[in-house]
Length: 270
Length: 59
Image 1: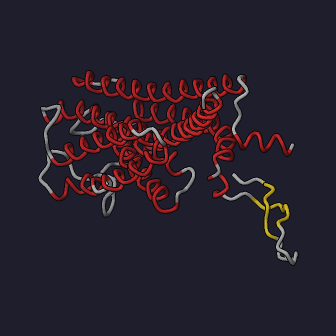
Image 2 (image 1 turned 135 degrees about the horizontal axis):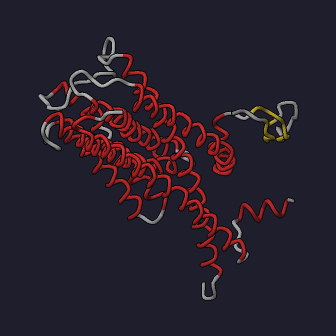
């Protein structure tokens, strides 16, 4: 992802420190500029879309036709290939929002609030998918669609928090003010992440303890673990593709907003 | 592929996943088209951002 760009750099050879155009390789930080990010996204999104489709096709073929049934759960183990990646990405989404919130509050990074705002609907989508698939998996395995145990409840709270952040972004019209309020809410909500992760260890829950992300070897056989990892990669690529596309949309939306304000300012009587 | 006695729950899960993924893809694609259309409309009305005007002046 490296190219060459012309940048103005202070030339130490010049006594008055005049800036001269010099060529240097582009770094990742250069993409923090919204215009540069737009051209980067335009180039990368088609490739990411193709790669995501390919990995999904391979992952689904492995999950549906190659992975064996579980000796206890039978074919319902196929729900895991949707449920587990969506759970991880739901939590990854909030983690990403928290990092972006720090970028907004501490460094006032130009793309930080754009990144935070656009993660929220995607994270909410994956959280909803996790809740639905978990419920549909729970009915045949536990005998109930839902129980208010610590894992399920804390995950439902995560979904409500996503909705809260989306509502906050839509309520405050001025983007910079909305970004600061959403950043504070996001950082407060990050307390829920360790609660979700360790809820199955701290409390007696109907939900099983960790099977993959745990000390020692995963408790899942490689015949099922491998398709799970491929599906996780596919969902992660989908998440990244959607996020880049949504960030591009948000930058364009802010340009439209600026232009509408300028148009309103030029109107007679202003 | 034999889904056994719990086929309803497995098919329901994959259908829900497809629905949510398609909804997110549609949201992003339709929003992109909408923003491009609005930018083109404003551009046609002669509204340009200051940075674009400055770039045009230099050029």
